[in-house]
Image 1 (cartoon, rainbow, N blue to C red):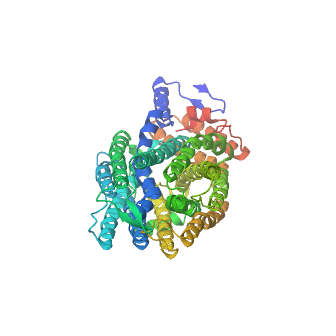
Image 2: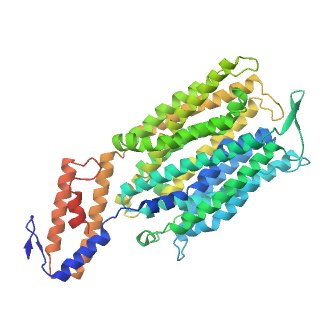
Image 3: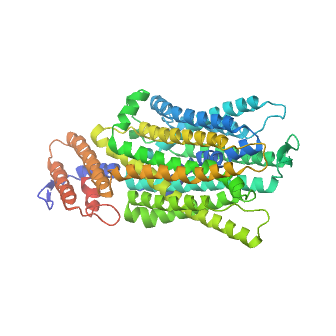
Length: 559
């Protein structure tokens, strides 16, 4: 028997040593290959393509192309988003009850991809001219509800798959970064498809006669532009969704079914956990601010700034800034200063930009080319800064959710990632849906007329208020919840060590049952426990977020 530094003894039996090494190798957390993270991240593209194209273009499409009354548009968007939010926890619970050889989550992705893409395609088709307004309302209303339900069947199980990528929070953070980057790329690509399609094919769905819109024919160039854009995204929706679902595997130890709960039981279970409550409220109000901009940005650029030929390109610039700044947030802010600080910095970039752009004067028809270019340049610069701020808000908030789920395992003893993700998305979508519906109804109060070629001053003022006052108020409320959010970087590391100790003790107990004659392994485990307690008391962590004793733990104590 060989002595260890703490006075314990390891068996000299070669078979025992081989068994110990095998157990350590099986339990130790391995680094997840980049290819697996990329394949997982591809699954976010259907959601990124469709929901953000709808967010930026659907209001413009319904109001200025399909010529649907603002009150009808408000009813479509409000009811659709609320319905979308309601179905999230329902699908989360149903996924808990799913039992197949492919797992609990992947079958939902495989079965919903093709129907969801098909409904999305027909969502951008305009019925014939002989259709009454109420008939057009019914058509878009039904299709929008169907699409939101199918997207929920895909997205809720997909987001829960992050817990199956790895049990190590750093690997999950890395996978989340890949997903966020792919998500932003998908948002950008989807909007580029629409921007190019509109820029090349759009020739105006109407002509003006006495300041009123007159349809030119059954299918205009602008209608065809939206339709072809939808076709391209629908094809990518199917390809990317099925690819991720096929190649992302569920871990067996994460597939153990927890007891299913009702909607209100799940709501009580999740929202009584205080870190989760603060995170949900913080992200909901923050994302409501972003949805104010998303729903009204196109209309604002077209009517309040009088730049109808540039609105789709300004959107592309904003989203390009989001994509390119993602890496900077990850490396320079998130890792160095923590997630709370990163989120706060994102807010501080977002607030000045929405105030600044809302104060820009309208571009007049007879103004000089120099003045016109000056205003256009300012719009693009503000879009770049705004995209940088949204990137920080988005990445930071979503990377906090796995931390909360891991923290909840300490008092609850189990992980309910499906419920935590489902209610997280539920409150976000519910808040955003109500906000977008109300903001569209406010346009009606502001005298928005779908048949007018140019909106009046009251409508332009309404758009400026929706772009500035609404987002700022929502972000100030979100900052209050951010202040009380309790999970700091140090607390996250302590949680990780606590969960590792539990897994080690559980593994040690199982191994001791197989080797009752030798109690030396318990001595080694106790030594590792003392090491962890020393690290927690002293607070010594390495620069990469791991403890200085991690190498020792990986080789001896992670049992």
